[in-house]
Every structure is written in C-alpha cells, then in structure tokens.
Image 1: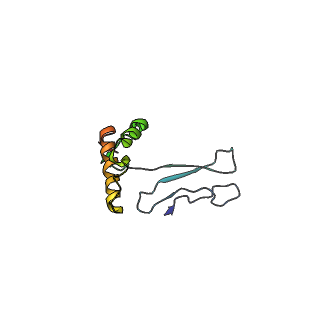
Image 2: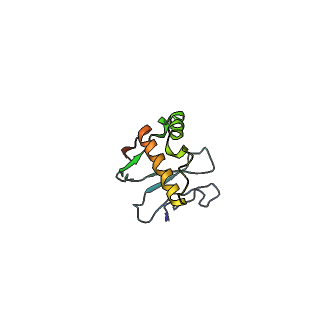
Image 3: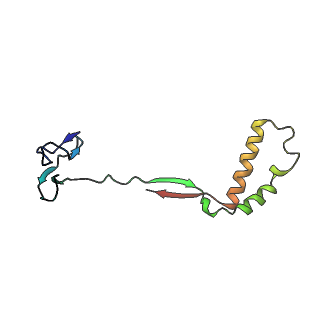
Length: 119
C-alpha cells in the first residue's frame, strides 16, 4: 500500500487525510486544495478503476418461497414415514436413507428444483 498525499492536509501541518492505494494499481494524481471553509484540506484525485468481468454460476435450487407448508405436511403424513411399522427392523443408516428419500420425493413433487444462472 502507498500513500499518495505529499503535502500537509491540516492548517497546523501534518498529514491527517490520505489517499492510499495498493502498490499493484496505478497511482492516482492527488490535489490538496485549501477551500477556506475548514482547517482540513480538500483532497481530489482521479483514479482509473477497472471493473472485473462478471462471474456467472449455474446452480440448482428450489424456490422455497413457493412452498405450501400445509401441502408439504399433508404429503409427509401420507408418506411411508408416517406408517407405524416402517421403522421396525431398520438400522439408523436405513432410517436416514428412508427419511432423505421420502422428503426429497415429496419436495420434487411439490417444489421441483430449478436450474438458474446467477451473477
């Protein structure tokens, strides 16, 4: 980082106000102006800035705002998750897989995933 102000910026001297840029960027031309309205000087500078190109990313998501919670609840109550004897004989891994499968299937029906490209 480099400071580009080379003259005092206050009536009593000293460098109170600064313009600092990274060393790998072009140095701006800085003017220190006494406007007569303050004990500080006005700093003006012109800097060439370049905007990086936009980065686009394609993702798959669900439009969660559109989820009808009542329909989702009803669909889960009618799924195999709500059947009393389903859990008998299943280990923890099988139960987790059943849960994930039923919830995913229900969401795919009620709230299908969408592929979108975002900036």
